Image 1 (tube, rainbow, N blue to C red):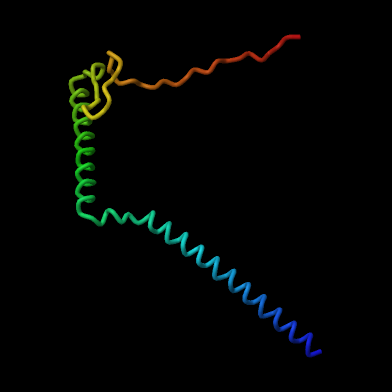
Image 2 (cartoon, rainbow, N blue to C red; image 1 turned 135 degrees about the vertical axis):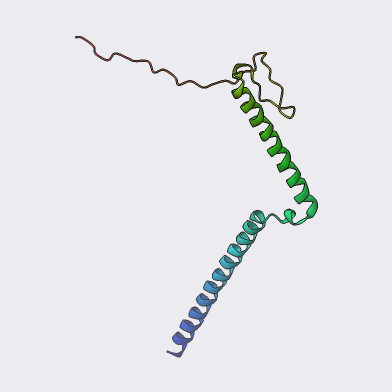
Amino acid sequence: MYNNTTNFITNYLSSQSERELIDISTSICSFLVSCMIFIKVMDLSACMSSVRNRRAQAKKEKERAQFEKMKVLFEAMQSNTLENLSLSTDDEAPAASADSRLKMTRKKKKTIIDNTNSV
């Protein structure tokens, strides 16, 4: 009986250590994945002033370009010359077509199929 009890205790202790080892390894893996996600989400380069300045400058340039486009559009609306309007800027690729009007989308017309078959 003493031998059986010893085997039970050693088996129990070995199974407990395996479970703890599995728990520790899964905890470490989840911690590493969490750290990787945190590093990806945290923009650490934004802490440097040179990067912040470049981003602010790019944002201002983009807003200025959008403001210029809207200004041209409003001026064209007031003078009713929308058909000759081109909103492309120097930063954008030049338009390949000679006609640089604003293109409007149109809804496609559905074809009506007559399903009445006379037999």
